Image (cartoon, rainbow, N blue to C red; front, side, top):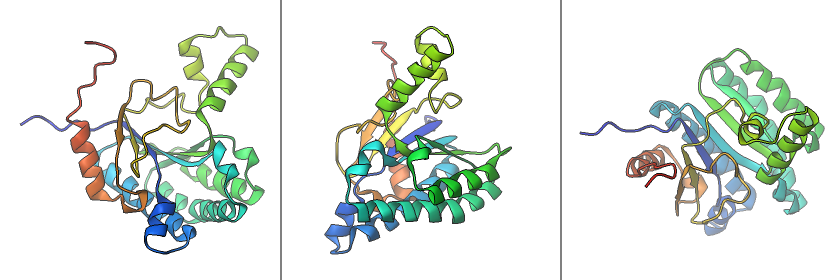
Length: 228
């Protein structure tokens, strides 16, 4: 029997919270809260499987166009996550980090994130990487600007070194929930050679069994990296 291949890095586009809530005649805010619960389940399932890095698209640069009430709800949840969940992960040797421009977030959210992520300093376990006010195009533009400012040549290697994920392996697998088949400006540079899996399951329904299926489907792929 062939050995099960475990991806080192899985990137998740969490989609479908609103549709999940609508299908149950509940407010969108309930869908987002359930989405946080699902993220916790996914982190635990990936940790059990031996995945080294998980990345989540938590809040994109395009999400600012949503209704202000929904944005406020998302930021309240993010602040609560930082204060209650990150310390728990820190005690378990996890590393929680963020990619994106945190400076545009409400000050209380920035403070909660930065202060609690510091609790993970020195940890060596699984990395939970959160895309917050993140956009793939902006990331690439900022990387190029910064390497030019530092007097370096514009090369693929140098651009990679100036990305938020410079010290992380590129995702082996990108998973998007809810049946949508697009990248939505997520980790555009990093997923150039990633396997991609678009699942009909809405994000609040993701759990350990879903991750079992993700791993099963990943093992049916043959990664060629451009080779025939």
